[in-house]
Amino acid sequence: MFFLMVLSGRVLGPGFGFVLGSVTMFASALLTGGVGPWMPFQMLSMGWFTMGAGLLPGPDRLRGRAELLMLSAYGFVAAFAYGTVMNLQGWVLLQGLSSGISFAPGAPLHENLLRFLAYVLATSLGWDLGRAALTVVLTLTVGGTLLRALRRATRRANFEAQVTFEAPEGPSRSEAPHRTYITYEPK
Image: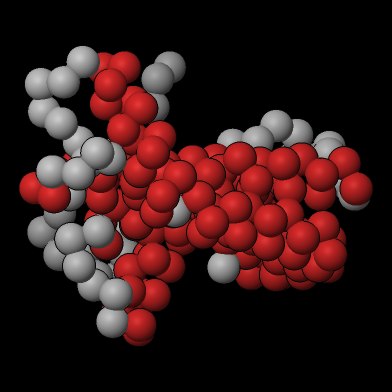
């Protein structure tokens, strides 16, 4: 799922990417029964993840292998960033466990950072590494084909409506007959 968010964010841009990432996580949670206090954090994190792909440089001029390498590198780093945001949310909520890795309110910053690092290593490093590696592999193998398909679909869908302003030629039939039009013609 993450590699699709990277590619979609790249093609559709940061604004639509943020909405797409957030709504995708919401729909995923509803379909899989994963609704809980972590869901807003997942939605926000995935929105940032997808928006970041849309903010990468050179969307019009960077194509081919260089673009796939850039998207793979971004996907690798962003997969860990996603995991870190999710860990921050869970780590603070687990403070009642009073273990050596839980958040300690009032403790010095360096002590809590060590606890957080231990928490990440003990709970989610394997998931984050797997997510990052799979994102890289799938982006490099099928990314080019999917980027072309997404770009073609957005061109054919024509998401940007052409706005034109035309002056009215006269009173329309739907207007009330009591209206008077005054035109001013400078001399």
